[in-house]
Length: 158
Image (cartoon, rainbow, N blue to C red; front, side):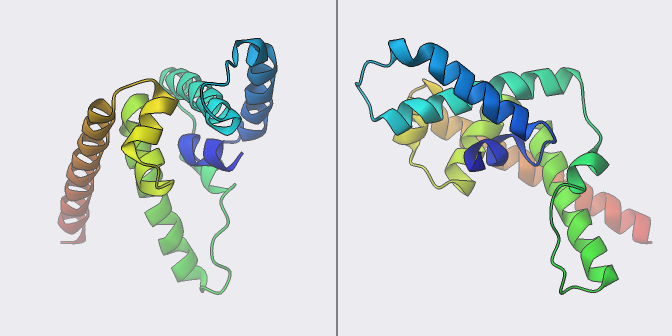
């Protein structure tokens, strides 16, 4: 559930996706050969479900307000601080949602989950250099989006 949440974001469908993971795992259990650890195989099922969901979601976008309502904000902050925190989170989620699913998943697994390129390669069925390229391209795209967003906000502030 935690990895799925990190891959797809605070999506309202997380519980349904978690069930989808376990159904897919149950149906695919006979294909588990034991070449890798069971947890690795299960995480690859999670990644596949996340890929499918992100592709569907790109065709049918959701509203960001629905997602932000599912994410807790720091209660110790005042109203302005909570609003600023929600705006930053909205920007981060928007940047992630603009990435293609393969780049997003590689980026989240590497940067947020801290997995090695080799571990990610096993999960996404790609080579470590390909995974490294996806992560790097995602970083460059996010940096460019953040720069454009910062420039736009500076212009609006004038």
